[in-house]
Length: 253
Image 1 (cartoon, rainbow, N blue to C red):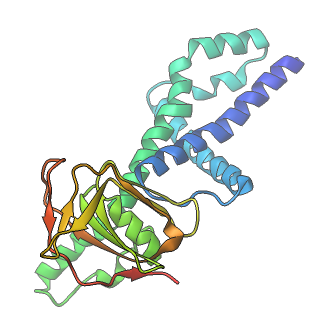
Image 2: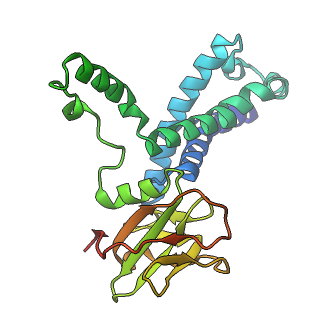
Image 3: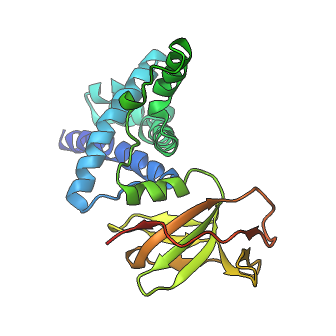
């Protein structure tokens, strides 16, 4: 009986921690979000997300004719072991698959601010009906990240290739390409950035991406300002030329 209680307890712990952990890791893989400040905050986040994920999973599985709560109804260790072995798909979906899919959907909604999409559609319709006199702009939800610094990293991870010009605290300027090979991390207040390809200036002052470059890492705490510029889609490995913009950009103190 003690073994059964321990096994059921372990099952409850897995259900209340693992789905939230999978959800959070998947979301951070596809969008720039803050990491928990410490293990206590991390456990709270995993617990809250796990409860949401398990509730969602049980609704979907029950709708599909499965009974996720069957394991908790077993009366002996043998019954519990048989139930675990006979329903790997159910628990695989509950603990791993559905949280991972939910994390990806959450990341996409953050990256593209999908929560404001209905407001934008209604706003377009309202402007057409009112001939431009009525606008829902003031009612639109703010982006998921309302801090300017975080919004810059969110823009970088929107799926577009960009030229990034970074000014450091010592006056150095670094230019490079941010694409699918680049990365940012939010392990501290000011995120670090890895540019996939280094850029240099030619005699005309235009930016040339160097095919031989294998990237450059920049410590976020050293960044004073940053500019993001759209880049036409061209094949990797070519020397793209971008007109040099004026100095300026986002700053932090």
